[in-house]
Length: 334
Ligand SMILES: Cc1cc2nc3c(=O)[nH]c(=O)nc-3n(C[C@H](O)[C@H](O)[C@H](O)COP(=O)(O)OP(=O)(O)OC[C@H]3O[C@@H](n4cnc5c(N)ncnc54)[C@H](O)[C@@H]3O)c2cc1C
Image 1 (cartoon, protein in one colour):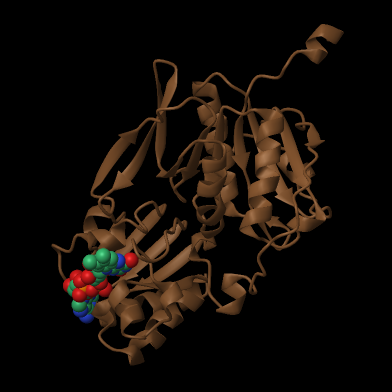
Image 2 (cartoon, rainbow, N blue to C red):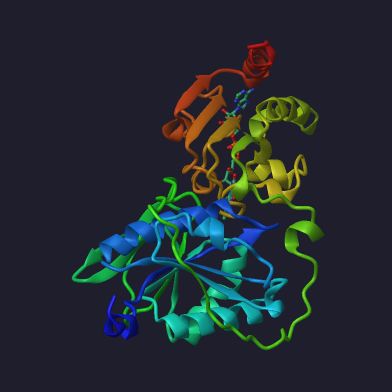
């Protein structure tokens, strides 16, 4: 490489902003990397991953396995625990330094908190919960669900790059491509001011909530389970399948399961490998939260239940007969 090439300004990249929890990348982050790789191709730009966190967060090597132009790390002691103002500042500094064309986030609780602020600081809007992108006349057009997922709208930003987009969890199931050689890991200096807010303990720890978005298997319960006392049956199935328990809204409203187990438009959006729906009708508000699950098994006594429209396998029957039979089979030694 000549020194001219070395000094040439780097082309603006598609940045995949990844998240980590307990020292591990979240599954949604891998989806964001996969989307960044694909969309970078469409926009004829390179893809890069961005990690912000405390100085001892060591995920650079893991990220560098993926086919990326670079892994950018913005690490600072002030980023040890999450606070929206510090994260916004750090990412703003990183974006100013790297001039990306597109900044992609997972549509997580955390990014919902700081990403709109970050976009506003750059004089842009956040296009949220995006499920697809295409390029028209050189500009990206994003698709996002509206009206509780009944319709999909195409959205184009009026301003220029950088575009700020959050990606619906589960919209990108394919794993990110691995690179032939490790991507270079580069530290980008960030120096956020100390936070002006005093955070409570993180949401899931304070409330003992579960992040169902990360679950690989979910057994979800609907009003067809009739009464709280029958939760034991669903729990047994979940245990045998090593699955988390989820629920439709009426189940949580009735207190059979805590609110953090609710799946749907006013609950969590999930994309497990396996989703078993027990006595769930499949109202649009529920479907919008789970229809991107890889394999959906529905057990419902009503053959017309809308859940069967999204199910890969459907059992029309009484769950109080089907689930015990299923448990018996699953418990047999293989
Ligand atoms: C603004 C708004 C937001 C909402 N947000 C959410 C949300 O986030 N998540 C959500 O889930 N809902 C949400 N809802 C509610 C949603 O519209 C539905 O009312 C709800 O999803 C229905 O839950 P369900 O399928 O458990 O119950 P039901 O619709 O009552 O369905 C029960 C099903 O069980 C079947 N069944 C009954 N007995 C048996 C049996 N013995 N064996 C097998 N099957 C049986 C029945 O055939 C039926 O299909 C929202 C609604 C609104 C208006």
